[in-house]
Image 1 (cartoon, rainbow, N blue to C red):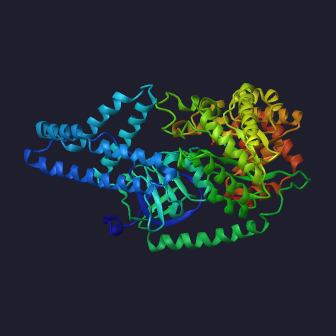
Image 2 (spheres, rainbow, N blue to C red; image 1 turned 60 degrees about the vertical axis):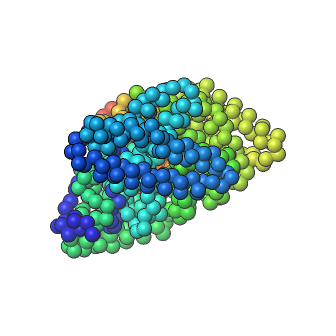
Image 3 (spheres, protein in one colour; image 1 turned 30 degrees about the horizontal axis):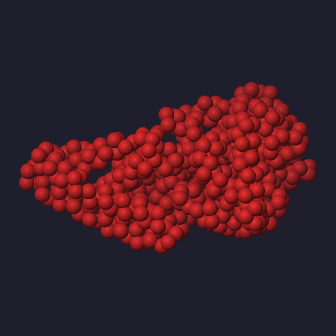
Length: 586
Ligand code: PEP
Ligand code: MG
């Protein structure tokens, strides 16, 4: 039992980014580490310090060998070879000798000596153009991280949990999130983060409570501490008292009653009181979400973020991908699944794709740019998607489109892949909708030009807002400037909807803005055909639409857009939402 479990109740406050309450033990992920201090050691401590390091090397070797055995089936022989290389690095005699010599001569703790030596090797390889040597850089990094974790006696990257846990972390990248045993994760409490980071988006997709900006929790909490995480109020309570637990139980009973009312109507269509239908679909990141999505009342999947499957297995074969996509499609039949092609980059980095850190990743090699630059990966994905299209209705959309040429190039590659598959006599569907995400201002402004190249638009407002207002979606310091109702954002949405109307194609919003029921009157007024939202929000958004009158919403939208003031516009929209469906804000 940890010390903290007998300590009195303690409350931390942060920013709530995904609703719900969870009560469980925490698992503290210390997956990043700063450079170890060069702590001096006494001559008599040298041997025990080196023995600690040797133990870490041994445990690391056992761990790598276990991975190697697990991967030694025929299909994974390439991965097994990688681990072979890791064992060689671990046992490199010159490294071992040099570490021992330095510790003995300089009397500095082994953590710092080993870490610095490995960094020297990495620095020598970083940025080299030879792809074999660049791979060695990643191998050394991987081995170093494993040894450092064991030196510190910490958990490994992909912990399997015996019991349900609340994850506590300094920061959680999308690739950290995909490695977690999600069947056991009940919530996230993170020191960094923002509402628009992908960790927060995933929490909302999985309907798990999440709170970010919780300062110092990694230092103060220990794995095994009992906590209550409140994703509605943004609180983390260690060792909640009996009174606190009772308060939360009664709150839960009230909210269950409210959710029950929404639950009964969730499969009914979302039609406004004057007869306008708005399709409500769900966003997904993982195949295991499909059952919950169907149960939520979503008519289809409006955005499947394929990056997360990629991060689960960056080397995954075309067959594996085709099988994953097919399972998603079959689970949603007769509904459609709109797959977004890889949107790596920004905060969803695959270290295997980029070896040099970019100064501005969100303005860099991201989305369709990276796919067109890595045609091998892009072809693999497009072929897998085409193969899945034989099993149900799919759409394919391209992320981060900034101009017409990108769409043309991507479509040409898709046509080539389709021709190849037909030649190989592999069946593919004959009715695949092709779309462009409109999430860069240049795409919104030239939406009329892009419209003739595609069958639908999907507005990625998470990025559209950040690029329009020049406000980093992950940076809490400027979070107050991140305003979906900024007049410039609304104008860009309107331009996109107008271009879609003229071209006769459908237009959806799949950014987080679509999940916010305070904004539903504005989105109905802007004339969106579809809102693709977090699964947990589907019944709420559908309910909100049914309480609205589209003509009133259009009048409201005209008024808001003529005001030119973000906050007054938001107040007007909130006022309509509160008047028409107050039950959603209780
Ligand atoms: C968006 O930008 O709104 C979007 C849906 O994509 P992502 O959040 O994955 O960038
Ligand atoms: Mg985006």
